[in-house]
Image (cartoon, rainbow, N blue to C red):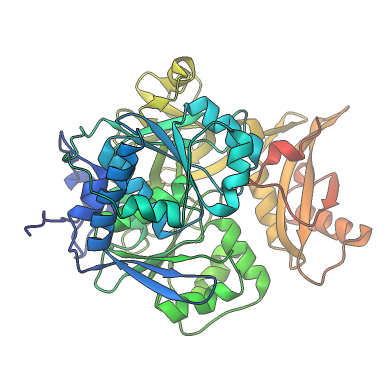
Length: 528
């Protein structure tokens, strides 16, 4: 079998940021199918997936198994009436079945709709209804929720029912999709209103590859094994890890058990994980666990989702022993900013520079570029990593763009060297006595206190000041909430930042409300 050459975008020799940007060119074929590229175009004997089950059993799956299994599943789904353009939900945690489902749907020309297992019936119902899903592939633990959410929707349960589809005749038609054809539909996390479905094309993979190579220090390398605790229903788990790794013929580790912050150190050591995507929430939980391991094989870690902060960044460098590359993107346009520590210096607190191939700028409300001034983070369009548009929301899609730029809705600052600094969501800005206060700086300051495991800061109404910062704090294990501790945290911020940034109120919680992607839902904390 002749396999297409899998060419990396960047060579491994010494290079500079400027040389990468200058030499980069997009090369996107007119015809392209994600399912074929990530399975059929790989060495069939190469390891694709290492799965650790709850029982402790380890199973290993090759690319040949993925290619044959997805062909057979595509045939089974076609016999169930699934056709090109149909949306099919996948409501299951990380597993080989989830990977096969995506590949098979893409080979059919259908659209995969990943939904997190953490969703309740109402959240599932909204997304199934809004997308017009034709069927759902679900883990047994999620079947009752899906049945409640959409009683008439055909459901395929992983297990014997799923296996039967994978054991029948394979799809008898060769996939024929254009790179611009839709492949997957992922809903925004809903931090600023009702979730919207971002529809992405098969070519979106190419938009992810420059950052994938930079974040992971020029993967793939021989023996690389990549892992993330992030749900594959999230853009971060699916397109920051699983699909680019399979496109490059890399093995992926998946763990059936829930994320164990303390046990993750031994997990990575046991399997020889060399690359990891660890969201800030996961890193903070690992830090708070007090665990560690000296026998790690990590070569690079990527993190994104919200600013990490220098305290956690320093801890990660000391305890994980490898480069930590922060990055930035969103569901609509992922992986457009970041770091590659071996090429351009990491500046703590910065989310990095525009990844080669992408153009990112800070703009004011009139579209003027700003340097050393706060404005909106904008991404030049067109860009292969960008969504085709919001599902059935042409007005919302149009509002997302201005004069050839995608508006992220995030505020940031670009310094004179091209480094970008995240400030906050536009809706998260606290205006107090004329001051504009972003919660990120206060949260980072609070995270530097030894009593704080997690925190979030929002603005609350104040008759005199307009709004004032309020902090919600999860204490570290063994630390008891008290008025004295609240006063100590306020003083900590007052002495390290400024009086006007000091939280006027500190509320202690057992946990913070988060989206399924791990982002803090500050809107839930704001008073109604």
